Length: 418
Image 1 (cartoon, rainbow, N blue to C red):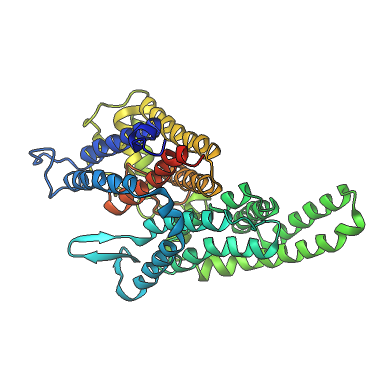
Image 2: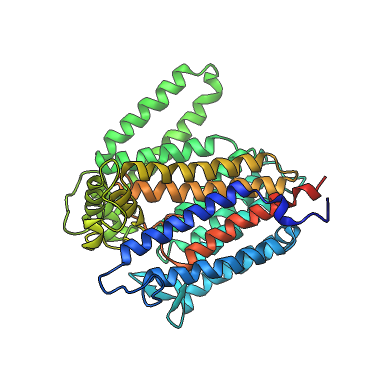
């Protein structure tokens, strides 16, 4: 078995879905970027031509990933994680600021976003930590270390500021939960989000009253009243402090454009010609596609450049307008199929390291997919999260390819782990 070719063991279902998404992505970038002066498909002065180069280099990248021994990724996971953190730190000194964000290194006309590559490195580091035999996430010290691995890149990315990328890293907590982290962490995060939103809509004392009612109801229903009374009081104190801190954080920590996006999403502000323009135009474009779309290269909103950044974060609007509801459903099914396939493969891995990494890959891809589409259709604030394999950009495409194909290599190698 050890002499079997890697190609014989690769999960071709995963690879086929990946190729389909990359091709669909390029086709829609071409449509969004094509002008009347575009003479041919590979005009390297245009975004679609540059994306073709990125895709071509992807073939080399995939070959390298599949050639390297799968054990390399486990052995050097900590080194890769450390290198990714150094690259994030370096942005504060050498980073290029684009649209108010210091997220890129500039190499001539080419830019590189290290936070995209840090996702795979963080997933590897988390998998390495959790695969150690003595690790038990019921242990508080182990919980702190696991959460710290996720928090380190987040703390370096938030000041850039890049809340979208920071959010992606935070969702790796689902991987910790899968491996034994107590569920109250997730429930606490869920209720914190609810309290945050309620605090933006209601006066703080009303929110505290609602929170107090919820804690009291839980206290009354609890069978262990004597044990829970102190815990209930502590929870209520923390909730009260959190509620009264929301207004300060919202007005002093968030940037103005972040505040505007939340206010528009929550109906507190209407600005269809300003900060809400992108989302409004995206909704118009998608809605105009109807059931079957206007036809490839026939989107009037797309050709009229009504949707800003349509080739990057808003690429889904091109799918909606030109391919219609049916086209968007096919795209969604491809993503869902890829994520479910990764989860299936993760469960059949022979090593804990590979399994945990697989769950990390699924978590990152799902969050990108869900947040991007939610953002485009107006049910989530615009925070600059690309759609995997479809949005324009070398950093994005290469980072997602690395993330996925490291796992493909691990899965192909499992026959040698008997």
